[in-house]
Image (cartoon, rainbow, N blue to C red; front, side):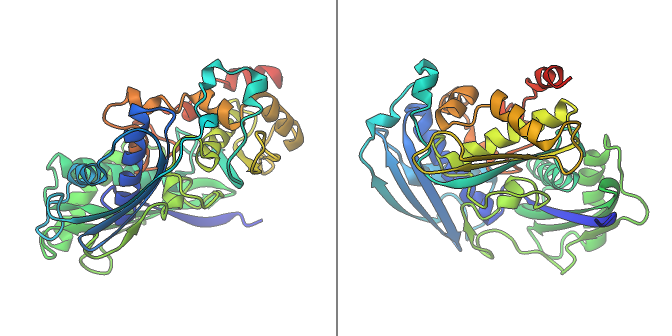
Length: 398
């Protein structure tokens, strides 16, 4: 096994066209669930130029104005160009109302264990959860840093610290590892869209981003950029971002949503789906289990794999892999995880109360996940990010 290597992960801001589509899709999900928790909805979005296309299938009595929701998201993100803004962009919709399936109108909190066992997954999928002790939130360090830098870029833009920034930007962070332990920052690459391609000049732009974005993010980190760290701003010249220059599609940034390609993910879109979709909530449950294993000190790295079969409630396969870092055997940990964690769809709904979260967050719940990652968030209280079972796992494995 190679001992020394460099790994890079990319993140993008909420103004990236793919993320714009994710946010519109999840805004639709939030709208339905905040008014009718049992609603079923699948929503996909595409954008190109000044045209937004929304395709939605839903089983609900809720009335929804898809065009209004999309314009609200575009306005919140901050697009105000004459060619693309919330007022003048064209929005095409293709809604399809489905028959309400009474079998899905259940209150998971009122079900017995036997009843939960009778509510199956509606599709087949293999999902992955991952945790590693490289960052405070047990995420791989490259994607952790990339997400924090894009978040800081957005904050600096919205606070008018860097008023020339446009909503779309990309960040790539390279981290050097020695024996699978990060030890230095190899590179930080930023591509930012500015209102005027030649203003500010490249030297001023680099200094502004270093002072306003990079330094605040790394201020509390154990590993800092050094004199050899390659900091590259708009390496190919001015970056032209947004829907006018790049098309966007829901679900196309799976690596940003999960682990920055450092660990496996299902490849399925996480956004635009109600909480009955096991390809979404199964990924949350798997992350919850993996994070608690690492937080309990039972491994320094943990991957939890779940495979679901259509028509079955319980995963047909559960595998815990600690890549040789476990205090117990992977088989022992697999058995422990299978006993202590809930992976049945209705059980996950109950454990995380997923159907009720949009109503408790008037400014949106799922749409907040659709930028800067669904995992390792320090700015959101996510039930699958808690480590409330770590102490119990530690006691039971002693």
